[in-house]
Image 1: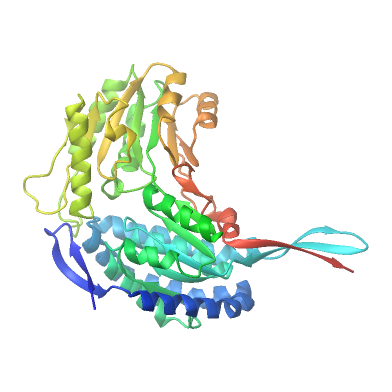
Image 2: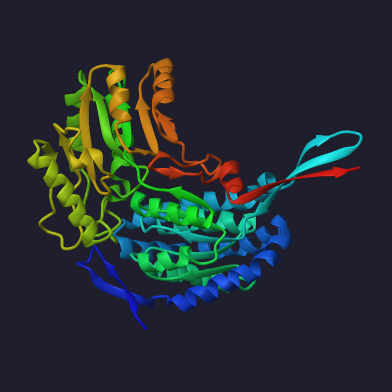
Length: 458
């Protein structure tokens, strides 16, 4: 049987394990089993489904250190970040378990002396859930758990970059008392994903690249099923001239360089008023250069490696294009000399033009583009000059201006100053090529269902 090999990008790609790639026949059997289980799972009801999942939550939390270390080794994320991610995930998992019944129970929409009308949220059926590698546990949690609570059975595929994390997830899920066919997992790259989405599915839930997401949307369209897609992002942040610069540098750094910049919702284009442009760039340079790039298993490390050599080479080609067209490297701009693996120094670029790849494309790594603006109108134009529309940030002490600008930016989530939209109760998703549909909150639960109205005579 063909193997999917997992390597450590922070240890010069040393092999750390392997899993069997799922065959077409194995995928067909798992989908058929999910189809067979979906009616029973639906008829259990929200309360009983949630009861099945509470021990799963406890088991994941019991194994969080093991899970965090595996994530660090498969994708180069600093161990501190891996542990923090799972702590953060704890709140999301708990929220899903505690609020599914609230948002998915029947609702009476009308009642008079003759009849009662209610809205019912029924599961769609079998969901293919396909997730990326950048937040391995988050992505599983966000895609699978709400689907199971809503009553859909799930066939799950994790990224080929973290198959061992996928195996641990499957192990925990199989250890639970979930009925046969309610959850299963397949392994492989895009070819396996292609086989999966072309099976007898009722829903496709996908997070990943815009290119793949658009293809999945075409597949779903031909099958006439729903697709929930969260894809790429090139988030802008606008910094007006009335801000306390020292007060925002930490957040700007975190929004761009967390997870080595490999976050769809990361800040990728910093748009700064010309009067404070030089000060902001200089303070960011000092912040970036104070960070430790190194072994992600060392708790003193601030930034580890990228996930894979191909990701490193893509980022290098984007930066090279910018330099050839006149961009200036303020700091970084290459691989660290003392580290072997998929490492790239945190980088700041100025003198960036709109025809450069670092402006037009999504940069999935530790590269921050910084450009100046003169007027509010120009700032909005720069912010919206992208195919994407996942998120944005606005920094200004003028609340009226910040709200006005927020209303004109094409993005699914917008943070003003120190506010942070990342709560399980908030819907998450994007405009334009960043996807369609929403995850999380009331909206996220209901996206996973078929809405039915039953009008009953008294």
